[in-house]
Length: 502
Image (cartoon, rainbow, N blue to C red; front, side, top):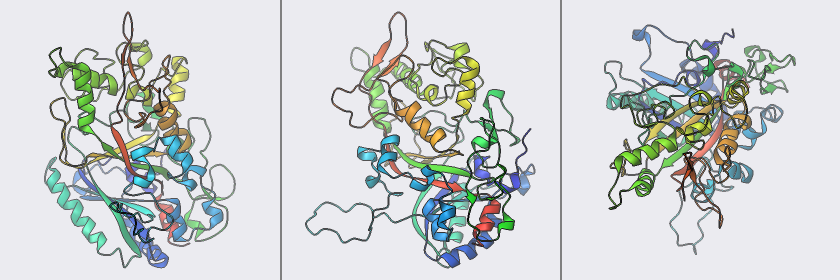
């Protein structure tokens, strides 16, 4: 059994910090390399690790983690030869014509419309005097993300008190940004709820892989090799993932472990991961209005029961979190974390949970295309991600009759993976965006795969398997708009110490 070096791993990848109901994600630019490295030489001690603390009285009321994008590591002074040791996806970043096509970042979700993560060649270029349009939000380069979490230990599930703790810690850190060579560019406040429901109203974050050696327990089909998420450990292919190595000597190399793959070089990546972040605005009104329209009574009134059922078919779970595979007719009504089930055993024909549902597509479990159970489970494990998500905006539990939030709302989506291309991008493109699934050819993922402006004649459907004939829901709307995003490297504690010495 693999044993993880938990004291060297930043905690957010192992633990979701669900008890810390308020967080602030701060995107920063490095403006003084020397000052920033001095700050790192001190602040690595403040980073929360993955070590589990059993004595609740000793758990800190705040947590802190950090991640750098490719430009951030360059700004710190990592040699180009060592920067080039990273994967192509990380080097290129999330914003490029190829990545935009792959991820579906088009139209309103195009990077030039983002609030952060898009860097024009010259953000300070004077405005065209003949352009009378309202100026867009200025976009400045970001180099790193500080993830700040807070919890009032004296209260249970009191988000307002957690907010005070989190923001007080943020203000303490912010007061030293300039002295530490940092400039704040953007910030997003994220929240969780006791029932962990997202803005459309569905319980979220139930199906998470368990990293082998992390100390967590659960169904064996959910236990995944550590190398799928952390550098320096074997993955589901039985090999070590491609890790960034120090190919040109710099800094105090004694702080880094040797490459487990046997190259003889020092491993910059060990106990670290790649962190994908996406700000996803949710159109709650459009989502539920569409479902209400497709399920309305003959007199035009809302059929709440049928609208909720169609929503469950699209998601793959009821709002309570109960899987529609096990509860096909009605939401049992109690908050559910049931996750130990397979589609081949309980629903091979998709008559309960449609083949095109969001959750069945993103984690097909034991039912990948025409593969058998054993091969399907193997393939599924090779494309898993550790998913983290925080709500932003006014908290609303969406439903057929509660669908109008005040202001913009959405998810700050984050996920960890050791191979951005094979894991996150594969899920987004192959299992999400492509309209072919099983015997269907016009069915993109109804949540993350729908185009805002489909090509002429292009269909975007959701097919519900049924007897004697299937039922097709036509003209799916796009209910998600990307507002920002980036690929980050989530370093180990040892690597943070090393970065201060380069």
